[in-house]
Image (cartoon, rainbow, N blue to C red; front, side, top):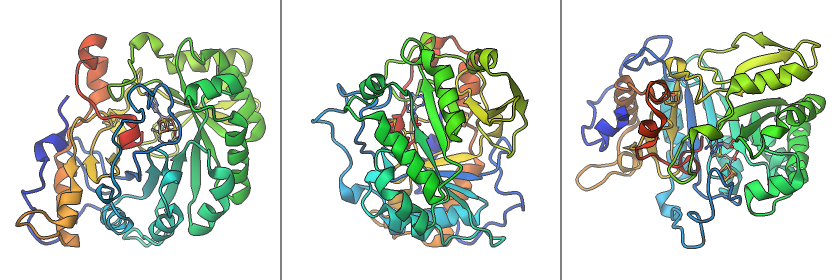
Length: 372
Ligand code: SAM
Ligand code: SF4
Ligand code: SF4
């Protein structure tokens, strides 16, 4: 697949000055999908080495992470987010790497919480985190204006959890972080579990039962062929349909309609009214048709698809390069509008139509780089 962003690698084709008038429902891409969500990766570093995301053999002591001046500064992140919000984005999510490792993250949260949509609403402000620092940081994040967190928990078995994160981090500290987040008002806390066959698929029902009892919404994510370092094969994927079937056999479920266009999780509720789960069928049920997301890597590249191999260098625009001066806000907005309006990505739909070997035979960015 080619990313539409790839065709626009260098924003040298500096868009004309002046602000484009946008339709009320947001800026449509080439397939009519409005830009609604922006995921901002604030660091490529992580204190975990999850075997499916940052395997130690690749992300070892000699791995070169970004230097501080390569990262977008808070000022630069706020400028990009502000431009996106003025164009119809009403959902911002901070991610990484591990976003809580970025020094001063509360300050960034506070500044993003001040943004307003053209209608005067506050965009929804969320974070995806491994939860390792939540116990300490939940209160400050809430006070700074964060609305919600999503925490990743792939196993409740401590030995297995430690084997997956590969840095011997105990699961109880993450569960304590989730409790602290809920108590601080960062809820409803969502929990993400990536299911890999033969690794943790025997925990589908126990995970569902645990988070039903503790009141969090658990979302099962199909293991994806993102990046090139995790040795993904199709047989490792546990289809969402199987996940739902296994839970339904023990705790009957019924489907719930989507609450928002572009929602990636299909929702199911327990028939006894005790809560709900979500399944994200990134592999077996492509949802490109309603994908309203753009992503920014920590070094300021804009990607219009999780599976893109190239992005557009916004940092060069923001800082200026060579003869090009730093862009104005109007130019930044125009550049974003130009990139989004040419967007044609639908990798998962195309992958579904290809034999697995062909689909995997291409360069992709790593999940820890773009934040999922
Ligand atoms: N470090 C934070 C965390 O783990 O929540 C945020 C970044 S992490 C890259 C975002 C999400 O991507 C996590 O929920 C993680 O489980 C998920 N993820 C990473 N690699 C994946 C893969 N190959 N397939 C599916 N999900 C993946
Ligand atoms: Fe770190 Fe999150 Fe990747 Fe695990 S999934 S290695 S916590 S970035
Ligand atoms: Fe969106 Fe790309 Fe994922 Fe399709 S494959 S849902 S276009 S990010």
